[in-house]
Image 1 (cartoon, helix red, strand yellow):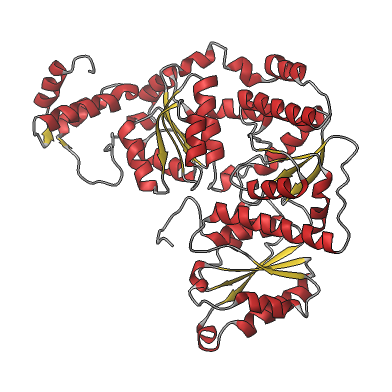
Image 2 (cartoon, one colour):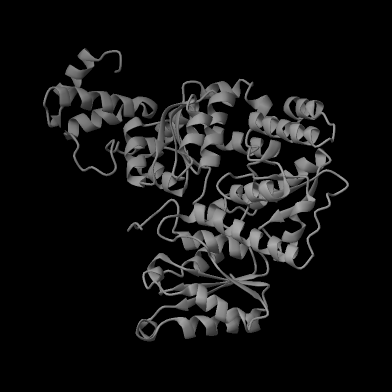
Length: 510
């Protein structure tokens, strides 16, 4: 456990609830004290859905502490079984309620005897895994449970569909633009004459799970959630899967080539070369834009990228390979993805960063002063404080990144959206001069190059006024060089005389 007022990845029960609420016929019972039940508010506020969040808190209060939870938990399971008539009720504790060390599996077994719904206990270690890992584990647990149930009842049909088909596994509530991504992915697969067999868990019924083996193979669009389920389906039903995320023109082509390879291995001869060529050369606006004169405005620009492993790796490759932007730092907060992340982007970024400490991320951004940031909502807040533009590319995010308009990140249309996001996130040539003339963010005082430390060199009024006269697009670099000069001379205050001395010594920078 970790005490924090803000986290990139939440505790384990949030991951379990994200999966449970993505199915349309699961009700979750959360065994938790008041304060741990914020998921209901978060999901209702952020997801653009019209239904109520199917989560009930079985509150751990002083009466529970005195008498135990068994009676209350079982009562809540029976009550929701009668009121909501779900197909499955899943019970999950939180880190806080896990301290009680009660036998929740026994509660589930007793409640299941008098329930029409299936009842299971979320099989995750709430002290050892985070939100992403718990979501992956819970999805695998639910899929295993219903496939084994169907097999036991002789309802499992493993005969493959006549036409090539896939399952899309992993997209769930509170993911980044996942509704739009699913629509774009379905359109791309339709173009390739590949049928979508099932999408799990987003919008699915648990009854659909028994049909998963009918597909030819599986697609895991975001590697954080779905890989454990895909691995289980590979072992049990010999179903291949791909974890390539089609984000960006290059990776979308790579994804389509992977589908082609899997289909050919399964005896379905196909060649998607012409489709890739037409989409890349004539349909995708981002492919054309990356070769246009406008994109040359990004030459010399720098960026810091931070987010979940899938989106941070994809954006890093797009910035470097497709847009010509130098990535100073590429990082992720996802535990267990360090090796894969390094393989994917180690050669594209000057530095890799693996951390869940947003203070460290903020201090590194402040020190490097990139031209733009691409990250989560926290990096957007950091960018506002540092006066650096930020494009949001990964969860966790605020409500403005659950757009009503069509904004996919996957596929060729997603590539267009990302190209717009990247280009519009940078402050480009003429905009700098207009901001100087008419007022804007570049006319504000320059802040310190660290967020968490209060130790900085003081500037007297005359020196500070002189600094403001320097054009905004080089002011930060000038300030940093003068402060370095002052530190080497052991000075605590920068005056006009110090500025002139630094200018003489570092004329190449000022």
